[in-house]
Image 1 (cartoon, rainbow, N blue to C red):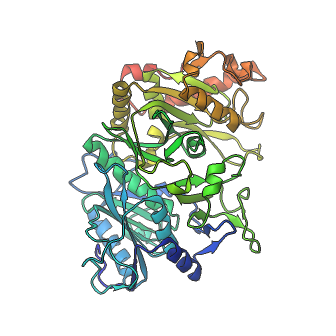
Image 2: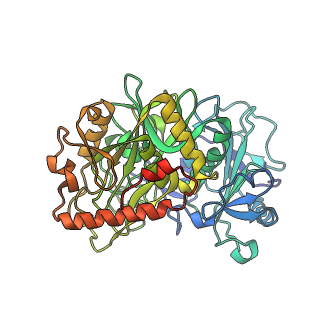
Length: 535
């Protein structure tokens, strides 16, 4: 089993109840009042991008987008660290999950995930697509003590394997990495090696990075987006960084959910990479997000949520541990999920931006060139504190293709694929500001989720395209002059700002930051550069 020769008990493809029981017995998690298991991830409550590396080896070296996102580690240093990691796992109790990434059988990738924590195995069981349990094969590790009730899956040959030794700490100086934590992709051996972090999202995103490398070589456009579909088969995509509403807005009771985070766009249509959802749950309520709220039940995993020790009731408003509280649950916990995880070609593509500077319009239509520009820019605003903490200033965040940390290939690869797919299938692109409109963070309320949902509906039912438009003076978006339910001043120039001069200053400042960020894309066409904001 990928270099592991002598192990303790190996639990293959355990059921959800068994994994929950073992997690609780081992003190890995706490059963909450909703039935979900709450686990803590220690000092790492989010991804560790500085600790992500790619093995520099001949088969992939010339394709990789080397830099801050994909830091190189030599084969020699990697193999030495891998040897020590595997030695650490020898004779330990392990959990193995066999599954698949990719709903479309033409592009699905068999995977295997080996973990030392039971709740990590539960996490990947709920997030990836499951394989049917068959008879025991002849593939256990040599010397492995396999539980009688579990077995490897018959004829399951993984193309990629994730080995998660989360409690093994590296020596940064010895292993020539940045910290005790490491997430390393080895394209030659088709392995992901993880250590020094208990944050479960590293497993999910590592395999997403793998698909972002593998699928473009097969003509499939990999996307960091959510997707849903209407009753008449109309598919919509939602691109956005964390906190912009990607999961929330795609979970529409009136539409089928294809998936909330990772998809491929092939010549046949869109398909989900996963079999589950990974939603942020800070400040979540039944009123705001009923579908997600109801999905938090037995079998779900919530992370780093404060829980009343007596009642076991989670407090989703408590951010004392982290603002990045999360919940993982299988797609079939969503009542209107599409079982196949597949849909046709999208007609609407929505870029989500939580603009804390109050500069962006609430909703707008983009030209194809603007779509390429803003896809490559990948803008939102990050808040240093919570909404109640108005003493913290927002900062602009640009993440190429709305997913820079997960792109092994140069950004232009993905932008070109988006342009080709949009042109071939007649998809239109829109901007939705889920943040502040007209007035910045700290000087007015965030644009309401209700209005965001209404604008999405108007995009999808064609009402927005029937509106009259004007050009935004800074970003040149096509902004509707009127929409039912939206205050006229929110669609007029400066979008209802209390101080026009202050708005103009903020708009000019944000536009300059866009232009500075886009300087990195020297190879982009003149048409795409011209589609950016006017300074």
